[in-house]
Image 1 (cartoon, rainbow, N blue to C red):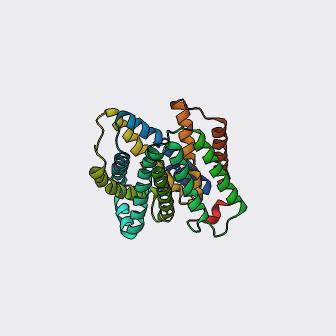
Image 2: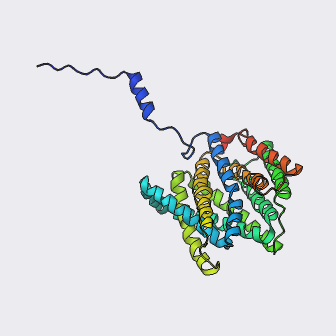
Image 3: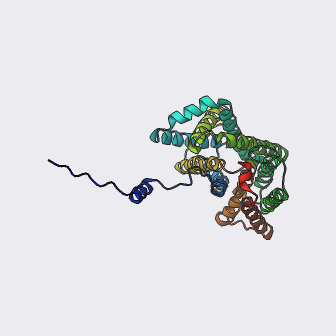
Length: 330
């Protein structure tokens, strides 16, 4: 009895089958390309730009304290991310990251929780214009000028031009959009905005190195969970009502937690694997530009000539990040 051996598939067929089985790269996955990383950070900034309008929508329905909104944002995102970790069987990686780098994870988590709460409070006390200009303008200066975090010790004329263009554009957008009332305590709001920008810079710099220690979803899950555990007790003790009574407010809270927290930070940490922290801070200046455009579209606030020029300058600065030798900071 003879047996015929089956012919072995050719090398080309095996390569084609492997290529069919290989999943395509997603924006949620880390990339070795600095340009892809920059796109990921920019998308995070756009999603964050919808956060301010979402908070306004929530407070229009149910006037929750900014601390309560921040706590729910982190809590909802943590539940979604932990559920995803269980489904993807990456919970062990989250625990492993906490064991390897507990101090850095806690630092990023507390920085993230602090700057979003301080920013919401600054908007309440000093108005949208002052809070946006001070907090989002201070962070790029601190990160872009400080050595380390993926940036070289010496700054080039291109670095200075990108930073100047971004801050000039941000100033024009902030001063022409929103038309804030000035708030109830302008000086307190300015202090809160400065603290918010400093916390954001610290969290971004710590997150830059942390993003290289684990996958973006793992970093986001660990830091978001710790941040939620830190804010929930504070909200329960000092922020008044703990939950909204209107179903519509819950819908907006869900969007705030899933889209502007879980998804946005996953994109952000994925981008930080290849984008220097200072460049990432400037790229996220798309946040106020997005907020200004949406405010004009949703609330009928007109973007004046200065605001339009500011949007163009910020976009030009972000585009310039891809031309200032993005690989040298790796």
